[in-house]
Length: 539
Image: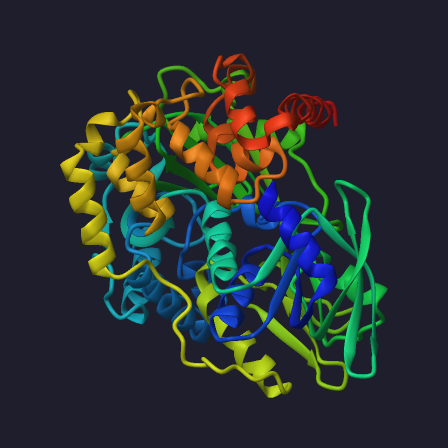
């Protein structure tokens, strides 16, 4: 909380080169890139960082294989190149995973023709992943007993990649890195209006927690508000070439269905892609691409039943999944860029490619669309465009992304082995502590090891059925701007995605976790969380 208070004070007292509105993936990489290159950067979000679209993805960083059907070969090449680059730069986080796809009899293309598409995809991706493999229905059953192959004509395996942690954590790490380079960021700060006068943007901002208002001054205004880009542009009277249409994606988290570590891919009975995705000791199931008119959406009763009906039809489960098996839900609206104020497009053909609209006279940029796979390109592109607007970037060649160097990693691994860190891994955890500490905290994990060495209680798990240790909660309290309890449970960690709400509330250590995170405000923050969850469940 002290970090946020300090940054709020700085936002109203300093002049900035750039103000970024929105702490999703587009805003996060823009902030990290610009700050690393020497710009004075401010970033605000009206909710929590990665609190909307960027925390409700499928956790896949894929090269866009579905765009082959619409013949967007250039986009697929670009996304595959970006995917490969992400895998190189974040080997602990963005990892190759096999997709096992079964094609039902009567599908619009025969299985072997679809398989040839995966060969083309592999070639476009410069053979970076394991080669695709054609499978008969019998082979699919041997590889994955849980798949119902009674109506399967054939299938295949191919590779793409996924986030080993969760999407919100990946996004937040860019913001945290940006803050390490000097970016002044704050969550729960809303931009109510902005005007451009005498070469300077004056943005009226409001702290949604305290109600305090203040003005942020910047030379450049970047609208990276995801699905709210159009709304903000209307408020500040900025015209753009692109606008957004919206696609809703939903996922249900259930008990672990298979331990194969593969993504099972099907086509649902309405033709949409359907995924069964590993999530540690849990499984994420769901569909994508339902057109909606508003950025706000929720999982409906029909959505739940559609997913459950399809998973029960496509999988050969011991017992059919029911709504009682749902541990948590995700629902996100994906903003898709389209040209023209009232432009129309074939919904099926729309892709997630990003677009940047620039008004040089006002030094205003809007970022439309985009996907996690392309995030490094977005960060580089925004830095390039900001420099063209006259902002000096003294360290323009500075690398701003990627895991710490091998020397830092080896130092961490050496210290972890000396103290036998993996022996402290909580029972039932989905991975060893050494692996998780490095992936989530990088060089900061070294100081966390020292805390555990000095006080063994730091390695205790506070919340039952969750993997997180006291030292991690202390780290979040100091450095991760946890403003509400949900920020930690849902976005800095993924506790509320894999542990039922009632189990979280019943955990004896939850109150101590609140004490660590919020100090004197612990009880108020806990009650706020309980009320927010009750309100959400009643919608």
